[in-house]
Amino acid sequence: QVQLVESGGGLVQPGGSLRLSCAASGSIFSINSMGWYRQAPGKGREFVARIIGDGSSNYADSVKGRFTISRDNAKNTVTVYLQMNSLKPEDTAVYYCNAHSGIYAADYWGQGTQVTVSS
Image (tube, rainbow, N blue to C red):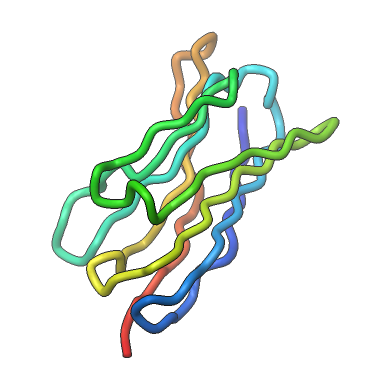
């Protein structure tokens, strides 16, 4: 099992920045990749960004050039960050951290953190 705890959401004005954090604990050895998804009101959950074991990453077209995903490995935890710059009102959503385990064929999700971009 993998536990994910997110933090860092909040209210920001258009053009502002926020950094989300997701701390993973438990069976972190089983994690192949970690990423972020978001769900806006009345819409389905959509992919935002992902980082895999070798450190490579990919992004949704809507956030390329504005968001950066990074990872910090510690002895018993892995923390993934999502630096969000030049935020737009359409970035408003609940952001969810995801961890994928290949050996367990499982996806784990955080509880979600609200990001609101509004003046």
